[in-house]
Every structure is written in C-alpha cells, then in structure tokens.
Image 1: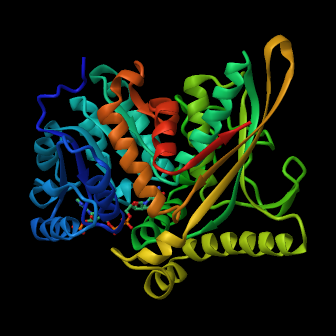
Image 2: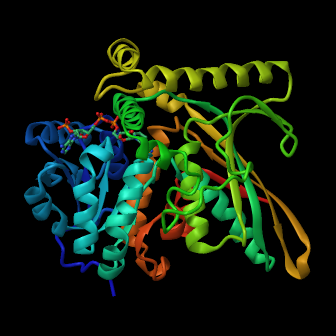
Image 3: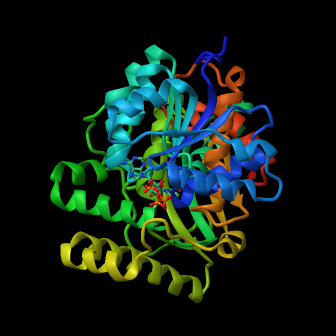
Length: 420
Ligand SMILES: NC(=O)c1ccc[n+]([C@@H]2O[C@H](COP(=O)([O-])OP(=O)(O)OC[C@H]3O[C@@H](n4cnc5c(N)ncnc54)[C@H](OP(=O)(O)O)[C@@H]3O)[C@@H](O)[C@H]2O)c1
C-alpha cells in the first residue's frame, strides 16, 4: 500500500523554489521527473514563483507540461499555511533555510500528517530538535523525515553505507571507516553563507548549542550520552599525515554534520559493534599537499573565529560573503566536481580481517549542481520507490531511509559510487 495515499493531489511539492538552490532543484525535476509525476513548486511569493515557472519552461529538455506547473503558497513561519500545504503532497522537498529559522514547523507538520520529507540542511541543532520532536510522531504516521540530502551529507552517508553493504555480502561488519573529502571545485551561495553565520552566531551566544556541536554523537537516537573521549572520533584540528591513504589532511568544514549523520546511520543500522567514523579533507602527499593542507586548516580556523565575533561577522556578511539569492554561475557549476575517498576495516566470515576502499564522485560543483541532483533524486526516491525502502519510518538519514536504492538512482544520474 502506498503511504501516504495516492489520493493526495501532488507526488512532490518543492518548497523554496524561488531560492538559488531551489531553482536548481526545480530545473532538475523539470528535466528528470517522469512525465506522469504530479509535482508543484511552492514558496511565499506568487510573483516570484510565476517567474521561476516561466524560466523553467524555456529550458531545453523540459516536460512540455512545465508551463502549467502548479504553484502553491506557504510561509515557513506560518503554521496555518503549512497546514494547508502539507496534506496536498506525498513528499515535500525543501530548500528553505536557514532551517533552524524557517524549517522547524514544516518538518513537524510533515511528521504529524504522514508526509515524507527531505531537505538540504547541514545544521546539527535543527536535526537534533527534529529527532526529539518528530521521530516518534513520524513512526506513528509512517512518514520518512530525511534531513541532509545534499552535499552534506549524502556522499559521506552513502559512501559508508556502501562499505557496510560490501562487508555484509561477505558475512561481515565494519569496525571503523575514514572519509576523505578530496579534490573539489565550487563556491558557496548567499543562503549557505547566511546559514553558516547563523549557526556560528547561535553557538557564540548559547553554551548549550556549543555543547551540542561539540558532541560527536549529537544525532544519536538518545541524548545525553556520555561525551566520547575517543581520539578517533574527536573533531580533527590542524594538519596531519594519514598513513592509511598516504595523504596530508586538514579539518573539513562539513565534517561537523557529516560525521554525526554517519554515526546516526550506524546507531540505527548497526554497521558494527562498535563502529567508529572520522572525516577530514585530504591533499596529495608532497610538499605542495602539505602547504595546501596548512592553508585550508588556517582558513577554517580563521573563518570560525571571524564569524564568532559580532563585528567581524557583520563585515564578512556585508563585504566578503555572497548575498541571498546569489551563488556560483552556471559555467562554474558545470566546471565543478568533487571526489570523496573512504578507507574502512571490518571483520569478515570466520573473523577474517577485511580492508575496503570506496570512492564517491560528482561531476558538477558539490553545493549546487550535485546538491540539486541529490535532493531531486531523494524526492523522486521517496515518491516512487516505496516498495524498495522497507519499513523504516521516523527521522532518518539518507542511508537509513533510502540506502542502496538512492545509490542506484544517483549512479544512473551520473554520480560514481565505487567500492572494493
Ligand atoms: N546541504 C547542502 O549541500 C546545501 C547546499 C546548498 C544550500 N544549502 C542550504 O540551503 C539553504 C538555501 O540556500 P540558498 O542559497 O538556496 O538560499 P537563498 O537563495 O537565500 O533561498 C532561500 C529560499 O528560502 C525562501 N524563504 C526564506 N524565508 C522563508 C519563509 N519564511 N517561508 C518560505 N520561504 C522562505 C526564500 O524565498 P523568497 O524568494 O520568497 O525570499 C528562498 O526561496 C541554506 O540553508 C543553505 O545552507 C545546503
């Protein structure tokens, strides 16, 4: 039986279609959604949504029905408008962020009404709050509430899931995995910059947010959990050389969310007992790699410091970072790419030690070209692949909600997922 009922007017509603990333997801669906998919764009401005629809209809390869794409109005802060929007959809995909500011009511409404939901947040406090408020409710209504369906955290979460799947096929489990964000090209949008500044400013003002961000298991099913002192899972600081991959490493700005999502997937799926994960950025092993790692390490520390102090945060927002609605050009998105490498160890049949590697690659810029694809395919997966997803409901991760089914979709859409 399809859940929620097919009698709802739309299979997918894309909320935030007027934003920089939302427009790209709308383009992705306009070109790639099957012809009989009933979908709509939603946001808070009829005029802006009409302009988006007009632009979509001019794209090469779009479904001719795009010029009549339905438009729905709602505001992420207005509960009454969400109460009207959410029951119309089987799946809501949202790009309205910062999610901590505009996303809480929407996720809660979806959980309450049994509507599947996916987003591109990378905000740990928002996901924690959603787990606490929505997990039990979504299990009861059989909704899949799936956060982090963009560059944070699909490559990490599905990369490790693939390693586990590989280990399971030889009767084994995982003991640990390391993720290495490697070569990549891409820049941030105004929405991403605003979200990062909001998160750092919330942490500066509130010690409980700082504690949560510093907890490597912040998204495990239950909090509080004793803060782990395991150096393997501590958030990396500074430059190091990793012998398992023979590359220099530096802190990766997205590992703060990616590691917590992978650990939540492990807590829900049991990759190994125990299983540990860490994630860094990696660079070639020579002196140039070392220099690049040092620059990135200093850059990350400098950005966090600058964003923590109110006056420099205002200067960053005003003069350095992109504004709302701005982001990388089409050329930059098409030139962009990313590579994620993984190394893992596990135990196979008869207690034999297993060593595995995996690679996840994207052929457009990670934050927008590939993120539009990842969110678009997540929404299509939730809408179309229910029979393959099993009986998992609640506040889930991409791996626990969609796992191998989403890997297959993303492969077919041009991403690489290799494991050996
Ligand atoms: N995970 C990833 O890899 C990834 C990648 C890219 C972006 N992101 C995240 O996605 C979010 C959006 O980024 P962006 O660059 O696309 O931002 P953006 O261009 O500023 O777009 C924001 C969107 O949110 C809408 N919005 C704002 N307040 C709203 C409200 N109260 N009710 C309804 N809609 C509202 C805006 O509508 P109006 O047009 O009406 O103002 C706009 O459509 C950010 O949080 C960013 O961090 C994540």
